[in-house]
Length: 195
Image (tube, rainbow, N blue to C red; front, side, top):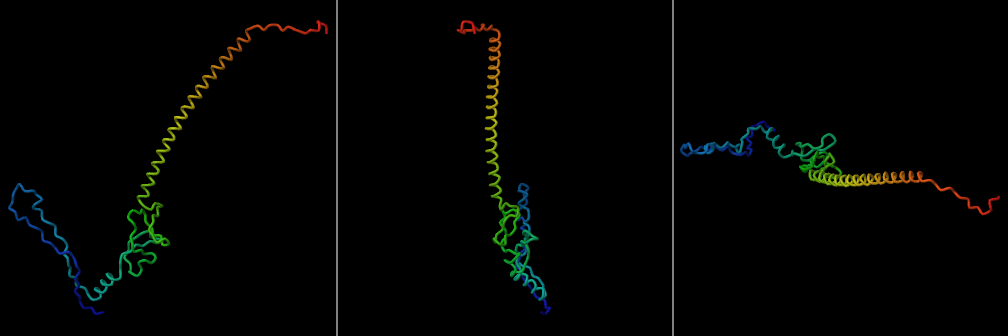
């Protein structure tokens, strides 16, 4: 390589001069009407590069691309790598779906998945909806169980009241039977009194 200077032109947006307000000054005009437009970057830029520098830039533009690294050390990271390394471990050309939370690449299955056991926001939303549904069902079941417990408690109270009334009745009957004299027992033996 020789060290001659090489002129390189890179396409860039051209600079645009600010637009001046050509209307006569009017105090009633909106203040934003006279605001100048911000200049934009030029469409082309001229660089003075040596042949080595030009070759280096050309090498970068032709032989390097961005890819996504995913290996044991890095879950997902965008890096500048040689074109021939893309598609080989640990560099993947396609970016993970933005809905995947904490993406990591499955090199066997050849797809991105979520390291946090949820592959996407829609799946998380579905899980939350399922949990809410189960919670509502459990709340309804608990309410039904509570109502059944109240009914059982009421029935037990009624039975206890009935048992007390029966005990009182039995106590009264026992007192009545003790208060009445019993008739003497008569021996009705027919042997004539001699045994």
